[in-house]
Image 1: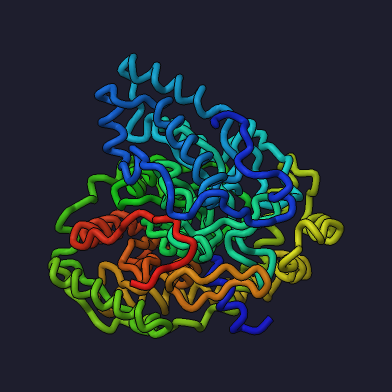
Image 2: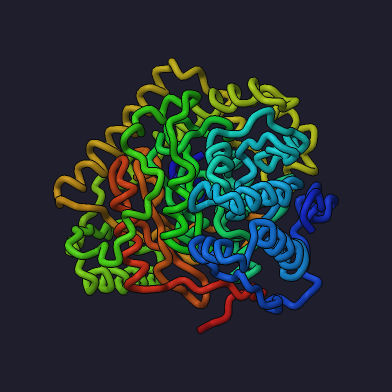
Length: 542
């Protein structure tokens, strides 16, 4: 695979109870379902665009209960996600959701509210272990029947915080790390997720289902995972706020891996406030993930203290113009966003280009191949999966080619399988190159040179048309520097192109989440860009 192919790949990688939300035959066949109701015709929803704060106020006043909220969102999932416009974002609902909600309601009556997430319905990506009756499959038929023996650490954190896990979301199978021609939002188990803004458009990936579901108000907030772009791209394409945390701020134990140097989970929400609240419930030092140890003293149980309405005032914001130019309309949106930040009191440094852009893409892919083989083998060996190695997954896919690979293959799996151990000189050289060019000579140098609080770039372009035959049509984006460095970034809605959302990313150094949340909140307050989707069959010229 050429370096150009890899750069395109990396930047895109991108009733309650046990009622099935999708037709099992369609899931096995990997077919997107057609809508039996006219797109754009959905019933009014009382909870549309309702925030966590408003939900808490409603539960405190007695207007809502955790159970009534869970029932309302589950009904909407059935009405719209699996019928109606058929977004196909939720791969499975949680048969225990209402029972969990009942327990939390009893706690509230006893004045034992756990915190801001108490009773809040959420959705999580189907590569995150839950020790319940839901499966953890990474979207693959090879793991379609697998249940986990224990919760992922982040799931336990969410349960302890009082969140009600409504279900799991579809994803780009194996977090978009199976094929060089993959289709974001498609998995063998879940089929194709659609973008709720225009149903013929891709939701981006790999946290496709979480992005589409939260945008469509199927839950209050959601959890995605990212190796490179998989939180920020679907957040951008679905008009959401997405936080890609510093690697180690949130534990990865119990999450189907790609890369231990780049993987993280993170919040996806409709507002910066909700994303900040969810992040506080997710963080914590985990003895099962050594990368979380440096986060001690650098994380916060409640990030709301950084939500400053004038958060942009006096901030030095760099503009990385060398990430512009792939779409003139996106550039226009960015220029308007920059003007809005300046009006809100930010000091704009323009240009502030990342000098190492594009210089570590090939090395990144090498690192991911080496680490995927090692990390997925370790995950499978410790899991309840019937297939214990990457080699066994490759064999399974070959045997089940018609069901698992009807549209694209497993070239990346095969390339990873050929890699040696993590003691290989090739791996060490590639990793050192990535760290030097993304960190020392990259983000660190840029921030120091211009004395920046953060720099901004377009997160991506408007959603492309779903193309099962040719794969994704990714045009550009800025996820790679923070992903490779393991640093923090946050994307916020910046504008629309013919009704399709476009996001802007704030990027900074390690443990910079408080600063990024402050800046993003200031921008959100100054612009109020987001609007909910209309479930249109295609985009409409504006």
